[in-house]
Amino acid sequence: MALAEAQIRDRAAELLRDPSYQTSLPAPATPPEGLHLPLGPLELLVRLLVWTSLAVAVFLAIAWLVRRLRGAPRDVLVPDLEAAAPAEIPIASAEALAARGRWAEAIHSLLLETLSALARAARVTPSLTSREIVERVPLPARAKEALTGLVLAVELSRFGGAAAGEEDYRACLSSFHAFLASYQGGR
Image (tube, rainbow, N blue to C red):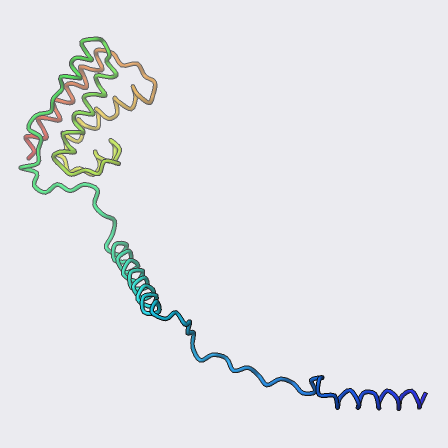
């Protein structure tokens, strides 16, 4: 057994003397000082694009933050109620529908014409519902009440499944005229 150990040591020493085997640890590689890609003439363009993109992103983030802090944008903007009030609201289509006995459609037409005139008079965001317009457009109390009645009648007949008759149309036409008189008088 001693002979085997001596032979192993001699063989190991012989292998360590052979220059084809690595006998020491490699030197540690030095990391690069900065990220530098050899892009040649494109390097300036790439740097310009990166910095411009970063500047745009920062600008958009600041603009978004300013809008959030300033509050929600106004949905309704009435520059001058004197000049903005609708002089006339055409109701010929509603009258034609009523003459054919299509009462629910006639009531809906009255509301649509009224809201269309309000949208022209006060710049109203098109995505607003009838109820949101009633809440947000500055109206005299009587006009708001009459418009609310029209909105409710349309909701009941169109979405609530209630049948509208001539009496309902006449009541809505009366509300429409009350709205128009109050709105024009409340300027």
